[in-house]
Image (cartoon, rainbow, N blue to C red; front, top):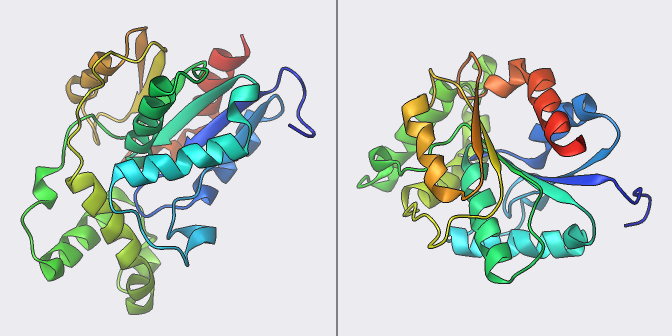
Length: 238
């Protein structure tokens, strides 16, 4: 890739439900040189807000894999980092990479989502789901307090959150037939996703899976970026 050193490491980042690629901007400054971030944008989000939302994770993963290919992901060493819903997106893209026998990532980083479904999002009418999505988004700390009752904000962003939560609600969380032959590192907060639940990621990976706990809510990374960046750099640059 133009402007990239021969040994530079690429890190492909998958954002949370309702989020945009810019979520990873602060992490980029903590990582510094040597790791090139590719902050993937979902259709219907951020800079791609005019595009239709995905109907399922199959559609999402196919779209994101095309972004990998556009960035020449497989020409130099790379890793993958999924945050919250991004963890699902990450493993679904990885399924395609393994199935196509493309070069594997050096490591996979997953955060703030256990490999199990969200039954509490199922069986509701569209209007009921609106309120549930609002409540969950606010509880996770994903919306500034000043915008909690802002009707314009919700008219703009509720469809985005709702589309993503619908994807998660319909996702079967089926581990790959053969565990991924790559190591994984899982970041979590006990208050958000307990360790005993996060341990289920171990069934998805054939190599080592290590777990790092942080204090805080669903968006604990906002207060621990330097430590998360240190672990990523230590893993990828050694």
